[in-house]
Image (cartoon, rainbow, N blue to C red; front, side, top):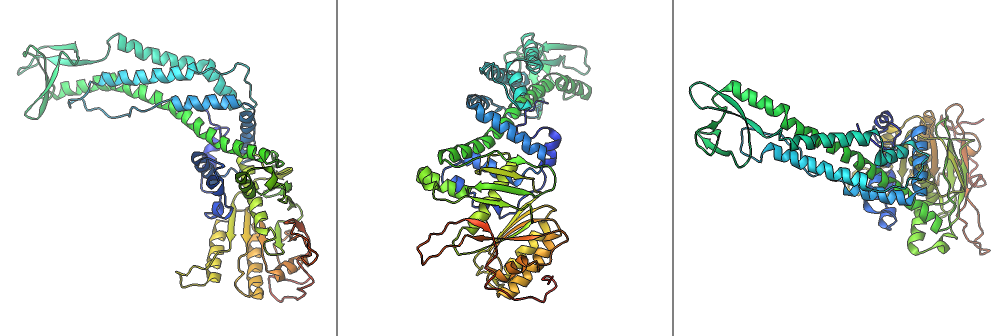
Length: 517
């Protein structure tokens, strides 16, 4: 089977990777990735393909590294990408495959074979008429194999031989035949005669199809003879109909392989477009280091929010991006992170940038950061606080608890969970107790959780080691950098590790999920 897969190293990896969705239903909305299309950064086709691949987010280290290598090769060879894209667009598969009923008047079957062969020839001319530089060398094996196929090699020769064989069959007149016999009570003679549109005309008598030659003496029909009818059907099925099917399948295999390539190129064009945007905005960019080992480990330096990058790009240049603060983060000391601090201080934007960076990393794309090192996660889920639904009889608290339950059902070991300002409408004590229980349950799955919250009592308990988690799990606190508004200081939008305003909340909690050491 002809196959050049730009997204997976082999068919087994593709089958393993195209399973159930590996992100929560609301993740793309919560991360606001739709702004990439709305702001004109990505085209509609690129964005749709990108969203489809995010839903099937790779979690295999080999697949991620494979895509990184292909991405680098394509970025270094823009002329090759342009030429290959043009080639894919020219290939056609616009003659539908169909079943033939030889007992109904229709276009002669051999005429369809002629059409199939002509279409196959045109596609072969497109394939081997495209000039790719002989000096093109790639690091990825799939691109090297593709270039070999387009220039020379066994696959090309086999394809040319198949087309040549079909042409020889047509030139020899070895198709377009039908059985003719003398009409009477008994069959006295059977002759194989060349059948063409000029020598035979279809006619129906008493609902039976008959074919009559111009001399009116010989009627070509098998309706009165089941044995002969079966023989005619066998002749057609073993010759012309099967040849049509073979030519159609061969063309479909060639065009289908390059349609998959075209889809892969659209995917990588999205990554290349994002990379160029980072460069245009003078944002640091790196190819992430892929860790193979414990799931969910992550550390990065100078991470720039992708959503704000798209906004700056639309506004027109690097000047607007210079004021945006990059952030550092690491969960090497604890899988659970609380982020507290001032309103509009950058907490939600940081949460979105972290989730987006993990997605781009697992897609094999470049990440807007000075450095980024991570291990793949098996699932990325999000739960962002929203306005209360006025159409339901339940309050917002109950809505959020239902969403937490749904998220728990999808949770996989080593997942990344992004929580933003949930349980903010209930009392702080009740919200802290509920979330303490939730975090205790989630920590048993070794999930990496980042929680933006105003539940300072819960964050304070984590800071003082009084939060009950699974054995070996730790929680760390991050806060928005302090500023003095009275002194005229501006918000920095930096997220740094630190205590969650522990001078305000000093209470202790007698709850099974909040423990005192």
